[in-house]
Image 1 (cartoon, each protein chain N blue to C red):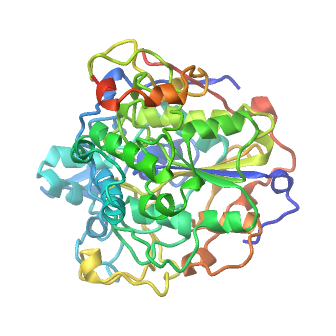
Image 2 (image 1 turned 135 degrees about the horizontal axis):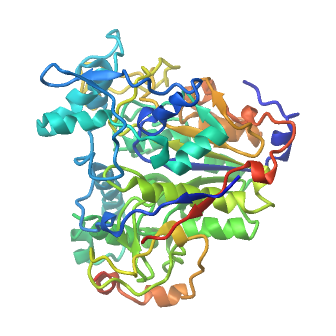
Length: 123
Length: 411
């Protein structure tokens, strides 16, 4: 049986500025419930406020998840490692996809990854 | 159905992997397969719904990967009532006509043309991964969401066999009377993990499992590593990436691959293929792993099969204030049908499973296969069918008789 090619979405499909769905609102609500119950968990207020977009929500969720798991940021999934995009929606060669997740190992250590504030990465 | 442990596929089985995607109905994703396999209960092309003008609108093979279902179709309990019974306030004894999908979507924007999109379905060539897996392994004709409602209460059934009386997204299981399947596995000395995509996507089991039992969790990278290192837990539950966000290592973009509208469906296809490939390409895993690919609920998108009645989830009842309808709900009927596929080299190509399943079948199956000690379980889980008896082949399929996928990079 011949291998079946699986096309990737176009780069324009990626939109971290998309408004969050009801599902994500509920996920956030659950995290906020925990934060209220346990205290701030050390989350920066600016991160907790900036949750209207998918990327903003993801930033807060990452901080909360790490806090709950009580550990340094774990290794990210092995996406193809390329320079961070300069503009969020700009088509560029550095777009990464889960497409390469299983085939291309990352070379960066998780410590190094965690040293880069996400707010700086995004630009 | 009691599991036949003499089946070679069951005797070889060591791992069960469940991948739960988001918010697509059976007909939307797999309905077109009826044309090539009449045993699959998909679409004839004549299914229809009335629109707000009274026109009869037929299903169309015009589903797009993205931008067609924006805004996200409503699928709270009352709107699913409208979709199933064509009435937002009343359920049974009204007949489940499946005639209210366009009406429900129309209500969101009062846009007639837009409301027709809810009846669109994909042609198989647009979903090479999902349709190939459905054709090459066992597709479930009757796997329904556990509740005619949204994501989190439905996902709860996959973890606990119940939503503890919730029909909404507010699932705060304080003092829960039933253990999650993971607790039961660990108590019996088995290994198990919930793999979320990354910390930025995290899990939909926030308040409960992540808060109280963070060691249960791993990332998708952990899953891939476990596959490579032959260290896969006995039971794995995988969650997709729920958001478009910068990759956590600052290297680029992590695109949402959950297939939740309005995320691009192709990213989910690649994600499914990545999970499948990780198992399929490891000769130490492939013969002894069964993978269930299933969607949590229909996301407000059309399906033509009326959801059946089921064992009530006693003692739970959701009151009208919670359902948003005039009726209380005793968890005695299922939600809308979703795609579900059982994948294993011990499954015959072209298999179609006609028994009725829902997400409580997942903990029921895991409990049965791993022979977990008897503990209190929900009424729904106790009554649930199990699915590993479908590994019926006497001889495992040859390697070249099973499909493989090549994931293409973005161009």
